[in-house]
Image (tube, rainbow, N blue to C red):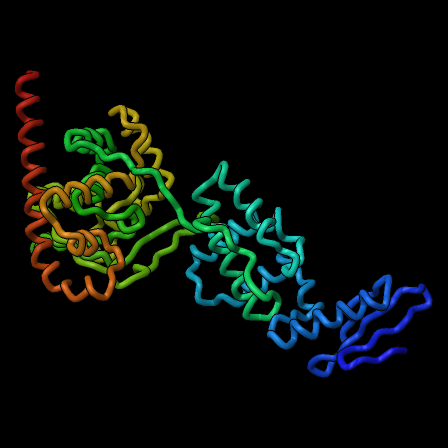
Length: 372
């Protein structure tokens, strides 16, 4: 048996040379080699890795991405329910089927690049989400000592580049409103002129609608999980919890809806199905698809009404900070310093939007009279 300053090598009965070394009180094998020189070179490399802090425990390095991702997700108690669902979906459908059986230590940058390029060809937005998740997992693997550095090195791979969404015209908004079932017409109104998200609309309660002061308080949202369970939660950010000024021209329509379709209790949902049960996303989507088809705008998603409303709000002269407030977007610390001015200006924005509604209503009445 030959000894050296670092590690030990010995000739096995097979004629190959085995290299051993000790670290943190444990004996590790560096493998077997055809020649003594190869074994010595391997030990020298390991010694250098130890000195520069780049050593990886051979046993830990053999952990598969399947196993490590499961442990990583199990330790993320900070994740919201829908975020955990999304991560489960991305792992099960887009990451682990291709990379799961590989050892974490064997995930090379070229492997990650090839996987991402293949996914991005057909699902670019999903590819960006999956890449961000994988990158987060492997950054933790670096901290855990399974990797020296993350192999996620594809420039721009985690950036989503959504196409510019379409905008409806004011007459089209009116046509879409008319095409929706009576109990869902207010959905179009609030999505456009108050810029509410789908989940915010589904979670809106009678208590959140203050007609006397012409404002809507966004205090909660209601979504449906991938398993069909209704989930009510508070806004993710402080910016999401907001009070929105309602255009005065809409007050009578909102009041009419509340009287006809909403229960009298303060916690009763503003939007329910025809049988009185909470409105589901699927029922709303079916009604929306029929309405947009009837007006020839099958390219419009329901969320595009919010985009339309914010575009119209911007045309009134609203500043970026004011739009961020109205939309419930998170803002920077600098923008938050001007939030006091936003609340005053929000009423002006609402009044300007109301003027657009009144013009559209007047045009509709004239058109009906001329048609008669």
